Amino acid sequence: METQVSSEKLLVDAALKQWQTGVDRANKLFGGASHEVLEREVAPGKNRLIYLLGHLLAVSDTMYATLRLGERLHPEYDAMFLKSSDRAVTPIASAEELKAAWVVVHERLQVEMAKLSAAEWLERHASVSEEDFVKEPHRNRFAILLGRTNHLSYHLGQVVLTK
Amino acid sequence: METQVSSEKLLVDAALKQWQTGVDRANKLFGGASHEVLEREVAPGKNRLIYLLGHLLAVSDTMYATLRLGERLHPEYDAMFLKSSDRAVTPIASAEELKAAWVVVHERLQVEMAKLSAAEWLERHASVSEEDFVKEPHRNRFAILLGRTNHLSYHLGQVVLTK
Image (cartoon, rainbow over all chains, first blue to last red; front, side, top):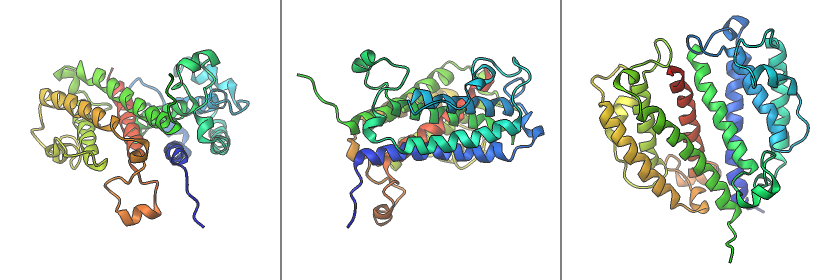
């Protein structure tokens, strides 16, 4: 017997697939990058790859909180990679540490996000109050997923310039 | 009487909003850019802004065909901005021409995309046959919308490096 997949689920699946495509692309770009490559700037005077690795990792880690999926794994990276620009904080976490954390954060995120139903994706995200959400139903988890996927693409477009 | 908006519509609306956010951001970045600024490369030896303007415009124009929304407006840009890399074709269209076309292409796209129901977003896109689509229902219009939005973000991340 064939199972009819709901339209809602197909829409959510498309967005999850885009997210994972971005994560997989980042895995390849950062995973194989040597220390020397990670020190490269995406353009003269702009962010180094190691900073973007940490920045994207820290943003992904905040998604546990924003999507209300449970405890974050690495709030300690916020000071280095979200609240500070590149080179403002020294030393930063090592490439080995960031690459190892990257794998764990994204694998767990994939598992947790896959558990959400379409109705749950349309629930409020953590940065909007229940009162405001009644008036602004577009401030839902799904909007966060799409926004973070685009944020990842935005920086991957920069990372590839070092190739 | 309050109207209950369907979950499907909320999911589609979130994706359309992300697309438009990207288009609006591009409007600001390219719209105010002088001839001199448009000649800048996003990084040494990489694409010039004028090329990325044409490239993003050409990709958006292909969306009429890929999303099966009607006739394309500017197939003539494909040779300059999709099939050729920057500086491979000279002369290219002028900044004035590209900026004017940009406005028309994106305004009309916004109107046409707003007409599609969630069920229509889940119909096949033009690059997949009806036979293949039965086996691969994820190759739908919605996936194209998400993919093109990420493509836009990817290049906007490069454009901002010239600031």
